Length: 139
Image 1: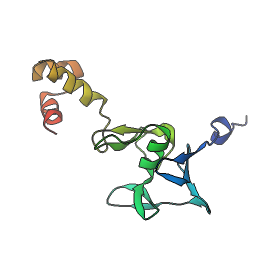
Image 2: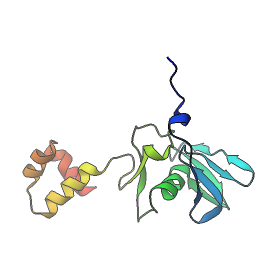
Image 3: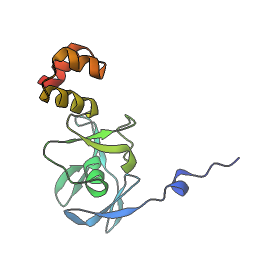
C-alpha cells in the first residue's frame, strides 16, 4: 500500500513575513526571498535555526510563528510541540512564556495562586509536587 507524501496531504503554503515584506515563510518551516529558498544556520547557544534578513539575525521559529500564528507579545519563546527543535513546521510551533517549556500547566498554577489557593491545593489540582509548584511561581 502506498502512503501519500506529507506534502500531498498538507500542501506547503507561503505567506509574506510581517516586517520583512520581501521574504516569505512556508508552513513547512522554510524561508525564501527574491533569490529562492534561504537556508538558516544552526546556532548551538540558542539551540535553534537562525537566519539573517535585511541585516537582522532572527530565529527561524520566530519568523514562522509571527507569520502563521500571531506576533510576538513581550518576552515569549517558541515551543516545539513534538520536542524536535529542528521541526519548524507551523503546526509544530506555538508561543510559550518559558524557553523549552509548555506553559499550559504554568498558567493553571498561576490562575489558582491568583485565586488564593494554597500551594498544597495547587499541587493536588495539577498533580505535581509542592516543590514544582513553588518553583513555577518563583520562575
